[in-house]
Length: 203
Image (cartoon, rainbow, N blue to C red):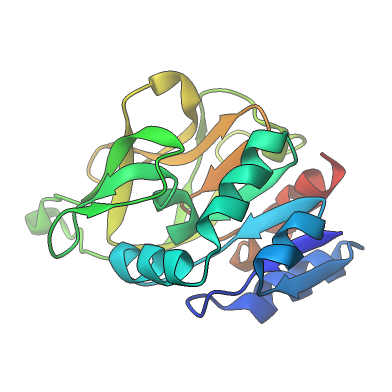
């Protein structure tokens, strides 16, 4: 069973519907016990990193998330769910995140004179650095949907799976072992995104 974690900061139904569309049993999870019972865990999210991590910790969900990752079970982070995997975020101060990976989450610095705005919103292309399980049968240069003002900067570049250009290359997905996370929204990325979710369900 694929579990989608509800901590109050994500459009869960669109993620659930996308998994159902590709033939997967996807359920909304709310408790630590729910997390421990699922085979695949999805951590989606929108909004501020500090609020999200605080809520997750206050609800006692942080350790079960980390236990799931350490167990080797498949894990997918989406958007804010990617950003929270790193050590620290810099939105309205400095905030400690989940610390699965070394690195930080920083705001875009773009040249607005060239028409670039923050947030980065809309369709953009993926450049494959390493072929993660999520990217099986996905063509090079495929376009996916983004909505974000911050992006991650890993200390270990070997975790980078794809990059995307927005006034310079930024990390648009990562992969290590059983953990995959995307800055973009597969559930909003039409046929390409559905194929990614199908690939995750097969892990």
